[in-house]
Length: 310
Ligand code: CP
Ligand code: NVA
Image (tube, rainbow, N blue to C red; front, side, top):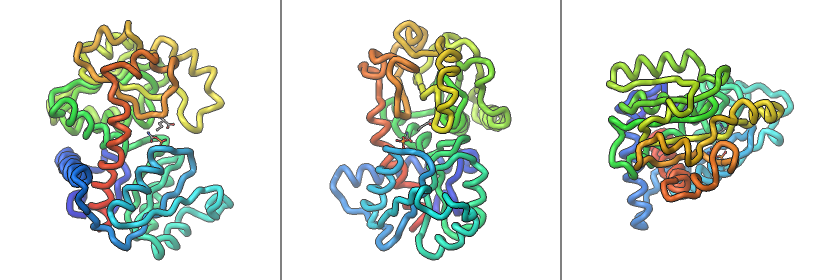
């Protein structure tokens, strides 16, 4: 693990700002090779197991294709079909799979489960989203911001919506790379307090700020990056009606973005609910970089895979 210096990639909070920048450099390098049609196969003969307890389009396909491009192979393991879905423990599963595959990417509910898997497994574990964090997405997003804005330090990201997994990972990503982060969210939907405090400590060392607002207009003021995510995450479907009501003043629309910097870019991890958290006009508009960011999942994750599995 040349860059990460540790077995697993579970959360950006576990790694330093410098390591994040090095991963981004490697990702850019791997992306350039890919675009030049150059072969880069450090993972020949290696297998990644991908456990999914939730749906996925981007994560599943980008990890599978990423492994193939790096010379390896990926196995899609749906929890419905694994014995884990019938009660086999995470730790037993980890010990068994450690002998077959070279790494595991897992998407699940509780963050604790991923930690448990990582401590029982002898192979690298990659977090492909939990209820608490989505570090692969945040890393890819930093790559996109670097490409579009030229650098990270000194920029301001405004995240409007639920204080969820995306909010957590982006907050930490900004704090560690010197970007101001400001969230606008309804009362009761703030990010996890412990994560806010980690981010604030980190931000203080990197000359940037973390702000939590209940006013979307206050949060978005002069933002260089305007970010949104769904109001109802996977696993919260039964709260949908309640959330539609709670978040109705937190839609990203022409009126709200008039408070952002005029050269702001709009970002969304996808999948999006058009006309809920963002209007079609904004998400499909000229300042939106949503497909650029989805594309970068592939390159950012190839950097993580190359570092952890080779
Ligand atoms: N953004 C993201 O992780 O998308 P999927 O749920 O499609 O993997
Ligand atoms: N917050 C969303 C992100 C999806 C990529 C969810 O957890 O469903």
